[in-house]
Structure formats: structure tokens, C-alpha cells
Length: 407
Image (cartoon, rainbow, N blue to C red; front, side):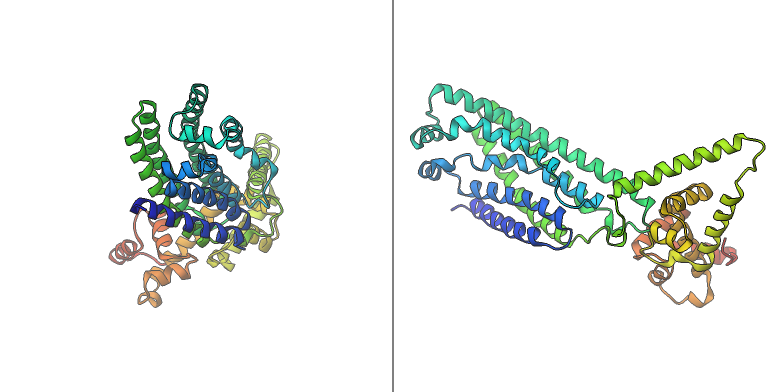
């Protein structure tokens, strides 16, 4: 056994182990079970490649091409994992099975090969099969290889689109996105794209009958998969439950956010209609009071100091429905919940940075006391909103003798 085969064999067993852990994981149960389909598919493919040789296939001809069935199952699970973990969906839906149709199509298309006798299959392995079967198999292989690359590109960019939509919309519900930015998933998707685009050059070499070059490329692709297996398994098992603080929501996250956005749009439309009516006050008295109540509550009770504060929690504390709370914040501040809460946190941080009693404390402690989960998040948001770092702010205010009054 060569070193290459040994590495693939180790990767195959590692993928099987991670399949088991992902399947039995209590945390993120449905998403992890979906991802276990991917790791299981990888394990089978790595196993078949580690054992691959004319001698092995000649001895076990009925196993030939068995790994190819699982390659179309590489890409849908990652997309479905992202779809489920970012939308808090419960259970696997029957419609999700449609994403695995390419595997079924390949199985059906390969029936003419699989129903052959062991002797005919051995002729295929030795590339000495009947002409009709050779033509058919070659056509299927070309279509199969091209579709695998297209499937990778389509599912990868669809996954990136899901993550982008999620990162933009989740700020309507939560005040801290540090644990739910899914940076590791973005890295995984881009690595996948690079690996399979590189693998597509192997398809080109096969079209020109350059078997050696194609084989080398596929060797590198599968070695890369072994590395990716470790990376993905580690982060998938480490990934916290995204919506623990939003467990009481009855609808999937996407539907909750859509309902909030529709309520804001409808309420703003009503306000604009009132503005056109000169007989009505510029701002409805009830709405004006609600705005003042929210601002007063934020300034006096300081709920933003709760690192995990969510829109439903704030709405419940003030006595509003979460949809209406989102509208009030949007109307009065012109921002989403996430930005409003972090604006208040930054103002609190500015106050503490200039407070004489906090001068001996480190920036990390100031960040924590201001409602931020980590110093890194605090630095990023502070610079984003002020254009300078907290340390620079302290120095500038020291030189200019800034007033320590909060806005």
C-alpha cells in the first residue's frame, strides 16, 4: 500500500467516525445529521480510492464505480445544512430529498453496467469491453464529470447566498452576531470551489485521453478532501446552537424576519399616508409616546448591557409585540435592532473610557461592561461606528479634554 492510499484510508475512517458523531449529536440535531450524509459520502469515496487498482477491481468487479454513486451527494448536504442551521427549521423535509436526485439519476443511468456479469465488468475494467458498452460508459462518464463540477459551483454559490442573506437579516432579531457569522462555513465553501475547479481540469485531461495527468489531479483532490474532513468535522461539532436565545419563536427564522419586515413596511406606509393628511399631526401621539417610552427604557434600564439581548426579549420587557418594537426602532432611529443596541453600547463604552474610576481597567473589561461579548467584537464595532479605536478615542479625548456626558 502506498503512502497516498494509506492517507486516504485514514481519511475514510476519520470520515466514518465523524459521520457517527454528527449523526448522534444532540446539538444542532437535524443540520448535523444532514451533514453526516456528506461525511459518509466522502468516507466511501476515499475508501474506494484508497483501494483502487486494476487488481482489486478485477477481484471484486461488482464494486467497480460504487464510489461514483456518492459523489453527487457531496454538495447538497452542505447547502441543506446551511439552510437548516440558519433558519431554525425542525426536521428533515421530504422536499429536501429532491436535492439528491442526481445520485438517483446516475444509478439509473449506470444500470446497463451494473446488470452485467462479472466477466463483462472485468472487460470494462481492462478497457476491453464491447463497443456499445464502451461508447455508453464513456458518454455517461463525461456527462457525470461535467455535472459534478456544475453541481459544486451551483450549490456553493447558493450556499454563499444563503449565508449573505442570513447575516443581513438576522440583525433584525439579535444584538450580537459573533457566534453566528459562520466564517468557517464560508472558508469551507470557497475551499470546496477551489478543490473542485482544480478537479475539473482532470475532466479536461480525460477528454483528451491524458489518463496520467487526470489521475494525478484526482489524487490531489482526494488528499485535499481528507484535510477538509478534519476541518469541517471539528467546526461542525463545535458550532453552538444558533437560536438558543430565540427558542420561543413559533416560525422559522426566515418567516419571522419576513413578518417583521412586512410589518415595518406596512406601518411606514400608514405613517406616510398620515403625513399627507394636513389635518393630522406630523407624528401620531400614540407613536410618539411609544418612541419616548422605548428611548427612556433604553437609557434608564440599559437592557443593551445584556450580551445576548434579542428583539423579542426587549419587546417583552417594554410590553410591545416584537414586530411593532422593530417598527418603533426603525422609525425613531432609522436602523435595525442590532445597530440601535450597539450604538447604545458604544455610547456606554465611551462613557466608561472617560470615567476616572475606570482608567486602570483594560479595554477588554470596558467591552464586557458595555455589553460586548469579546474585545475583538468591541474593537470592530467601535472602529466601524467612530472611525477610530477605543485607545485612540481615549488619547484624543485626553488631549481635547472631552466632556464625559452621554448623548
